Amino acid sequence: MMSRMLFSILRLLLNGLARLPLAVLYVLSDGVYLLLRLIGYRRKTVRDNLMKCFPDMPDDELKLTERRFYRNFADYIFETIKLLHISDAEISRRMTFENVELMRSHIDAGTSVIVYFSHCGNWEWAPSVTLHTERPEAVYGQVYRPLKDKLFDDLMLRVRSRFGSLNYPKSHVLRDLIMARREGKVTVTGFMSDQKPSHGDPTYVTMFLNRPTAFITGTETLARKLSMAAVYWDMSKTGRGHYHITCRPLADNVAETNPGDVTARYAEMLEKTIRRNPSIWLWSHKRWKYPVTLPQPK
Image 1 (spheres, rainbow, N blue to C red):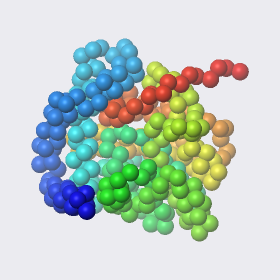
Image 2: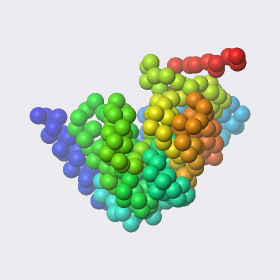
Image 3: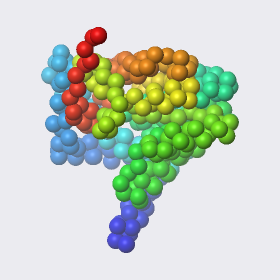
């Protein structure tokens, strides 16, 4: 009962914050940025990741990238809160898309699409793609890992459903997409494929940001089983509170590619995205917690 009362108070606070203009929220974000720096939130992980991924980067540039990461992360927090109360017009102006014709062409051909995405910029704003595609016959959704706290999980689901997309729990997504196909529905489904694979998951290991890195292969496996097209969302930050995604082709039909090819292409494109602006990636994530080795040539 006490936790529900505290959560109700928090929800009222978040809804109140969400009604403030972003200009005001960024003032609060500046304060949180200073707090994150003061308490050293995951500082060791952030610095270790940056130093090992960019061994040739000058020390002053590494420190600048670190500071910019924390500022972007603070902005991400308040921009995500803003999703509770933001107009379609404002989000469409702030979160823009390029080459959505690529997805439209697959949808018009009756081919479902799998979207490879990452923790760059503000990934929570990306579901607003539904305001740009003009294909209401398609079912849009994203895969997520349910939070342990049911109340916070419900809140995040509300945020992520803001523009009409569905949320598929990771453990059920294959079943849900198979059911959608049996019902004759065309789906566009986003996967955050830059996460550390879960224990026991099959992986694809490649050099990524100067380090042997294990990538999730479940995204490709699912797309192969369902003969889906694959698209990469290349995120860039064009200004404070302004993001842009370019839709880039990975495969017209994943089932017609060699195993591992699509994952390798995704890793290559993601690295280019990060190197273009390192500060917008989620460096506080323990991506390399468990070291891996590259497979030996046969």
